[in-house]
Structures are given as structure tokens and as C-alpha cells.
Length: 230
Image (cartoon, rainbow, N blue to C red; front, side, top):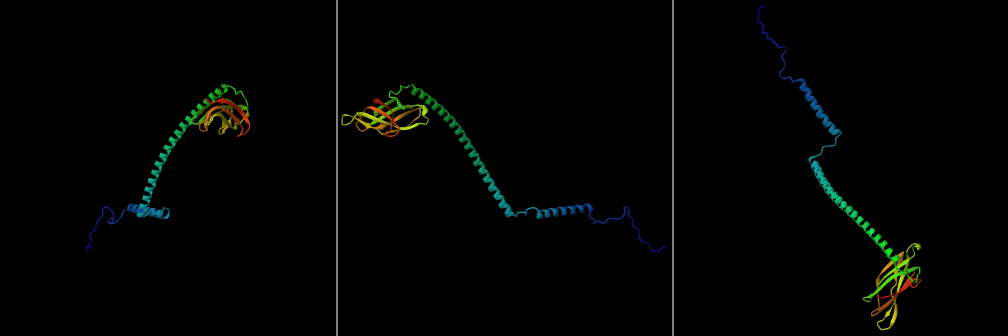
């Protein structure tokens, strides 16, 4: 009973914890991080496109830069083309306005000419085509002419034919003679004004001209008038 006794150690705070123990929350946190990383790797390997190597990434970057430069170049060309198109449209609009103004002037002049032609004396010879007025002049070895022809409007489309000029005058060898000049094609609507010149023989001095309007060369006479050469 009074033998040797062992010392008694008191632990006031309960059972002593091991110094090497890890908190459970930290273990759960590490486990969640590992699971998340593994899930990301699994999804990337399973469903996502494969990761590019450094060389492939560099090649892709170069291709992108080239495509972007091409896009910028095309955008610049498109802007330039758009400006040229706008300029062309503006020019077209201006030309259209100018053309409309020119047409108005032409229509007014045609109306004025119709009034003047209507006021000319009638052809004394009559005919289906009337020679309402004519003027001839000899200059530089040629016969210049201004001839006004008219016909009834009820005939419809313009009448095709030829104007034949027969010129009487003094030849280079002396004496009077009559020459036939080259026929002039005509298309007569309500009225037709013919202006031009035809060559004369060397030394020929014209005195008067007979105007013949024919349905064709050497054909039927539709109208005729004789006028002096001034």
C-alpha cells in the first residue's frame, strides 16, 4: 500500500492534440482545387480544340496580321472607289442637266426654224417637195449651197431621195455649158435645210443653178426650182 507510486499528470484542457494534424477545411479546399483543375483539364482535352504550339501560335498571329493588313488595304480601296463613284454620279447629274438644257435650246431653235420656214414664199412650181429658198455662191472652185425644202406633214415618215444640182455657166474654154454635180442624199420630213459645197470644174464660172429633188438618182422629179448664183 505504501509502495512506490507513479506521478500523475493533469491535462486541464482535455486531451492534447497532435502537433502534426491538418485542419479539415484545408483538406477540403485542396481537394476541391485539385478536382476543379482536373475537371478543367478533362473538359479541355475532351471537348475543346487542342492547344496550339508556340510555332502554330506564331504562324496564326502572322496570318492574322496579314489578313488585317489586307482588310485595311481593301477598306482604303473601297473608300477611294466610293469617292470616285460619288464624283462620277455628280458629273453624270451635271451632264444630265446640261443635256436637258441643250435639248430645250434645240427644241426652241427648231420651233423658231419652223416659224421662219413657214414664213418663206411658196415654191411657184409647187410639187410634192417644194424648194422654198436657196442661196448659191462660188468660192475656191466649189459651189456652196443653202437650200430649204418642205413637204406636207401628212405623209408620215421622212421621204428619202436625192437633190440634183444642174449648174449653168461659162466654161474655161469659153461659151456656156451646163454641168451636173454629184447628187446629195436627203431625207425630208416637214422641212429640211441642206448646207454644203460641191466641187466645180477648173475655170468654170457658175451663173444659175437648177435644183431638182428626185425620189432616187435619175428618178422621178418631186420638186424643181431655178435660182441664180451670187
